[in-house]
Length: 311
Image 1 (tube, rainbow, N blue to C red):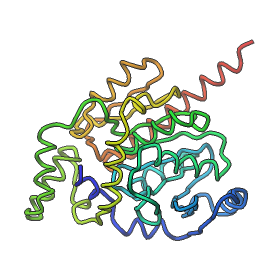
Image 2 (cartoon, rainbow, N blue to C red; image 1 turned 90 degrees about the horizontal axis):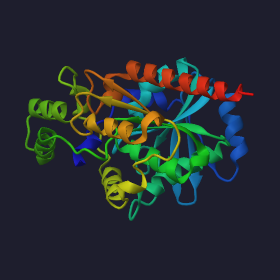
Image 3 (cartoon, rainbow, N blue to C red; image 1 turned 180 degrees about the vertical axis):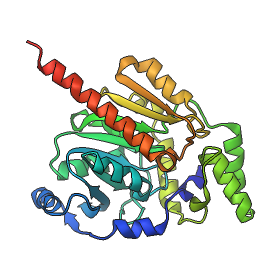
């Protein structure tokens, strides 16, 4: 929905993330890796990668196993600020990706498919010379994450989906509120309430999202790319182990979507359902999400160790 691009965190967080920056032009991948390792791993570092006419801006934080973070439609990496901090504290490196047309990322926005966005992510992973990553997508980003896992299984160790949709559509009240929000003829109080209905749980405060910058062109390009990509090409998310975290009050991607993935793919899917969380769960419940990710990845390591120890 066109109004989804309004969901970004405050600009003050963005300023914090932009303390350090650099631009790299491929194919010189090795200097990029060295530069990242020379920075303090507990501070977010901005890095740009240039692939022909595409520039991908990333925010890299922490050290350890790598989790790539792909934001929702029209969102920047700001939406992952707290989650990335928590994952870094837990011993993981996060690479948050700004999609084309958002913040410092740029490139063609016409006639794209989800494969183009997934290709941008794959190019960054390869530029950093990382063998395999855990790929996390929030909302629209979960479709890009699943496309990456389908197209480049060699790069994906596991798939983590937050507010996963694709099978069960939005609730009527969310659609109605979105149309009302898009009309533009609302008081501030009405905007806040419409935003709450669309994206947030009933007890959450949507106020910080109401007056934020709109990445209109990028959001529209992402929507058109989604329409141009049949869901059957990405629904499975490849064959890697999958964690699905759904908000029980999500009206855009209702929790039935996560249950559908679990029912179809069985033990491959770990499903976690969070109370007091809507479509904006990455902002509402970052601690609960970080806990679910830690437990999931620990379980995957234990399974791998058990397999390796077999005679």
